[in-house]
Amino acid sequence: MVNRPLVSIACITYNHVKFISQAIEGFLRQETAFPIEIIIHDDASTDGTAAIVQDYASKHAHILPILQTENQYSQGIKPSTTHVLPRCRGKYVALCEGDDY
Image (tube, rainbow, N blue to C red; front, side, top):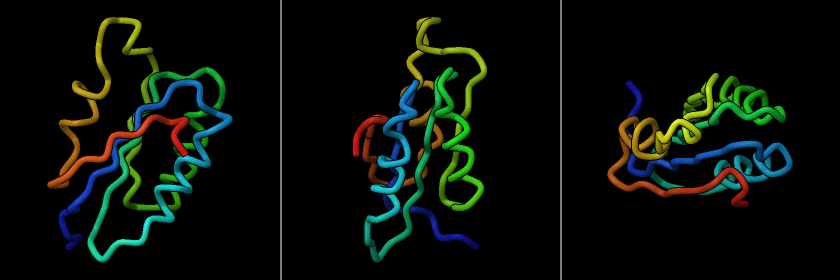
């Protein structure tokens, strides 16, 4: 059984193809003595961002992708509060954008 993460990294991304790999690599480089999870919400990017997120998720079980097919923000839906934060299981949450690296 996987331990409940102490920290959830919540990442919101949209059309960050130039930056998302660096952001994810930065998350993965963090050295911890406790379990973490990385939840990445892609808001229907049109530039290939979602494919990169999916590729990382296929290689790292603690990366949980949320891949939208319709842009949520343009519909007045805040992805962080509606889709991402409710999925976070960690005691602590680190908020990051897809271009934060």
